[in-house]
Length: 578
Image: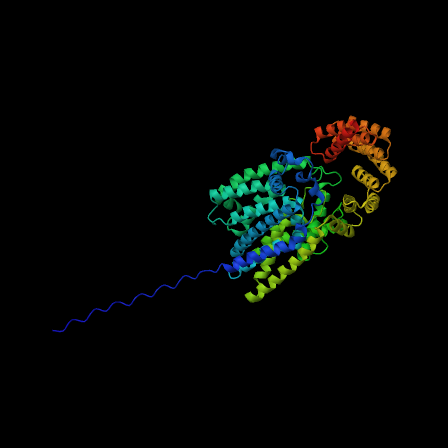
């Protein structure tokens, strides 16, 4: 009997195809190249000194090294000052590391721009080239020459720190599901918003940006969107109200901004900014004519300097953005974002300087989104488009590198500003001061004289001009300028300087008389006792000199002039007693 045939095994099921692993090396390589390009572009400024307002910040002031943290952060921007305090604790007064921190904050802001652009491209329906275009957006933010003032200038850390935090909050907001914002996301957004406001006041615009984004990209009425995201908008409304009250209080006490700013009513500033907005847009597209202190005349009426045309163009732009929002969503949204993010500094609140490049740093996101709208419609191969975008970024990096050379020293910065703003007082004054700081007293006197021709000399100009004359060995001219300054402001500082000049000329009696006036005006001004000690020293009264230097050190324990004078006076008194 034959055996029954064996049952055949069913054919093995085909093995599932291995999951395609997305290569990460292109993203890592792009990030590394970006970092190298950024450090290269900003290298000239990274190695440069503190400039302009940097020298008035706490880390550059004598005696602040012994101050507690509370003295650093008690001002209007405590989080900003906390970063300076940390910088000082780790690197002292070495400018290099302050610049490096600015560049790293800028890099973090660029990373957030990548995620923001990536999500908005996705919402606009772009998927094939989403990562490429988002990478270009981040690169353009990082390497555009218009950003240099906000990054290369240490005092502008308020700009790139606050913008990094604003973009971080915006990234969290965009990362939520369309169903609504979770409590965790809401807490993160509100926390980052508060930190941004404590870094710079323009961050109060963030709630308006989030509401604009909700209304523009999502269906339904604004009230429906607010109800859907009540977990965010309820605490954000409270935080925004507190932020506005905080900013209003700051504006009430500021002498360079606010509705009480002398000589610049809000409507004149509004007319002026209707022109400034278009200058910013032009400089983003064609970055030429950059200047740390531009001559930008005030428009006292809509008919002056073409303000009416600028205002009409803004109305047309806003109307066009609304009209074509469905057809060109990224461009229309970007235009509205640009105008919105400029509003804190370029609308109704007067600011002493009507035009400043650093104000575009926050608003540049809007212009980048406008560019992405056109790039995503460019019908070119992916390789060709990638090569073209890389060439644009290379050119932008080269321009940024060149602009950073201007920020590499006070001479290059203010010579550039004087050449571009020859009728403006401040660049000429700062150039004179730069010459004086390095002992070039002849050029300093020359530039102070030219500055005095541009504006009526004020107290500070007269004092600095006098010091340059004294450095040049012209005491009579120095005393003349100091007496003019004393007629404007009767301070211990100016009378102590008068005593100092007399003392250097051997006129001890006149020097001591002037120093007595200085002491009477302000007994706590340490340099009065330093100069008096010098007078006693030159007359051979070494014990009297030592006593004066000790008085100075009781007021300012780290005063180097007093310490050096005390050592010399003590040594001479000891030798004289032998």
